[in-house]
Length: 143
Image 1 (cartoon, rainbow, N blue to C red):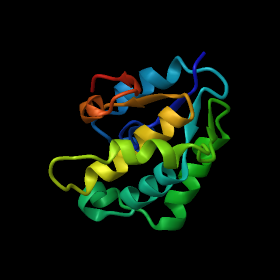
Image 2 (image 1 turned 120 degrees about the vertical axis):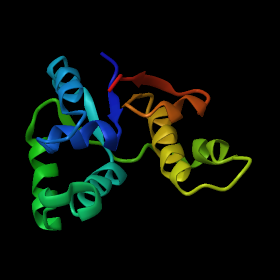
Image 3 (image 1 turned 180 degrees about the vertical axis):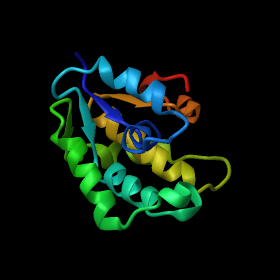
């Protein structure tokens, strides 16, 4: 079993019952083994930020403290655990930040890609945009 770093777009559906991608996310989670999935701090904070955003959550928006509790409950599941940043992220990340045009979203994606590469992890996501990062071991799920 190779550990994987889970992207926000894969974990949010596990935490939000009404999410459009909940069914495929649950299917993915059903096949996981103990300790197989890593969450990094950036993903944790992004999950909290999204669950507190009315534009995303609509009537299901929750306070930050409740969102943090949901993330911690996910980590209570033996399949998931928190991972510290690998020591070599700062070596890998600059190579992934070379874009022809500036873009804010790709900075976070580049960080997650660098985290997974530096940690020798597979990155699990619904986001096809991660294909652009050379050297990444990508587990691309279909929504």
